[in-house]
Image (cartoon, rainbow, N blue to C red; front, side):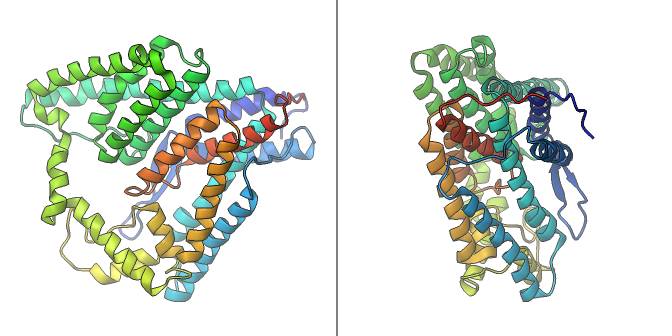
Length: 431
């Protein structure tokens, strides 16, 4: 399948670039009346071929299997995976069925994440450090180019309508290639933290002009995206940037943000609804008025906790919450276009559908990851530790556990730390 004279470094870097870029392109498939659809990324299509390539190099002894610089990481992954399998078994025993959402989105989806993690670890220990940095740089530059493309599209085809119709505020949220504004919000703050930390460690990672332009675009992304959780994380990202870049943050972060603020003020004077997309402040007030999507989220939390109290140890099983919701609210008046919803809090979802056993397994996994990231300081481990904190905060209101690039980067960071612990550069395997 693969040529005998294959250069492992170049081929591995090629796969890394395809996976990193493809992880930013997401589509929804198979959505219907009885199925919410399956979100896949373009990188999912490359993953099987990358897996065959890795297997080929391992059999030929041209590469090494990844090792981890995190305590009991392999065991933690096994326990978390066992919780997923137990969740599928539990829902079948409780309800006599396993939904497509549970089997594909949550069951198969989890093992795809594990594959990304191992692939990241393999990249870390079989590509040179220069190659890894190059792949991460391409990852960042593709995101920046997509930002330029989508912001240009907004100015040309969306916002000009709003300037003409001063009362207009109904334009689609900026979601890039992710197809979902909340997933995109987490991607852009994660990318910003990653680039900022790398810039502080390696000033040539991105030129000053490119980096400053990146920050110049950020307020526009935040406003046109409209994710309130993303706004909070953006404030934290600014603080991270000032901490890491110190004196250079004035030129590279503060001044670009000030220029963006001036431009956005001009937009506000023309049509305030452009800046206050969907009147997010009013939407927040709806929480206390018993209306809107936020009130639905609160009701979902109450229902999830009530269901967990009935199944504290093993939970209700994967997909069990949606089965209960459909039975409870079928035919009831809808709020915000729906009568019920899935659990948007990742920790609460694990607790409700996998019980205390699942919570312990996944809790142990993330503790292992956090400890591993702190054991060796590098641009990648520092940035991923920050992203992990962002994940912990963002996942309280949005379910982003299944973000492919997150697990790919975690594998890259933990695998890279294990290699650097040996005190040698990554091996450059030949043919």
